[in-house]
Image (tube, rainbow, N blue to C red):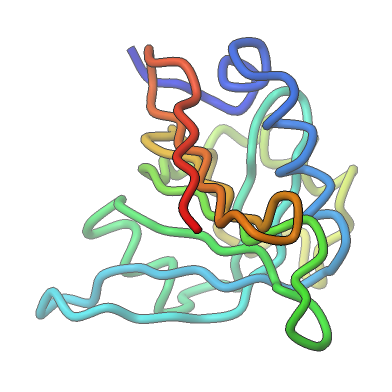
Amino acid sequence: MPFNWEAFATAEPDLAAIVEKRFGAFTHHTLATLRKDGSPRTTGLEVRFLNGELWLGMMPHSLKALDLRRDPRFALQANPGPGTEMAGGDVRIAGRAVEVRDPKVVARYADSVNPPDPDTFHLFRTELTEVVRTSIEDGKYLAVQLWKPGVPVHTTRRT
């Protein structure tokens, strides 16, 4: 069963709130896709959490959109912010991106987001396979929270 953002947020509301806050702290984040030859491509991207979905919007014919059309697997990392303290921890999401071509859905997204050219952009909704948060706890533990569909969050702590 594919897990969209709403399903994840329902299953793990505390982690979902932290992840949304981290992505909301900055506009641009890093998306990793797979090129035709299988090598990774990283690019900047804005993301949106709207109507129970995590959306990825892209300029027409961008290489990242073409990558996702060919192979929908992606990894997304929240902008770590200025300095090295990474307040709120490091947050990553992985999954599959499904292109949305329904004109009504695309128009509703465009009305909410106001893309530069609302008539020509690629829109993908995400199906999550993993959400990870890495942070420092009590000033001494490296804590890694890992969620996968159908499994509660598992936290590992290291010194």
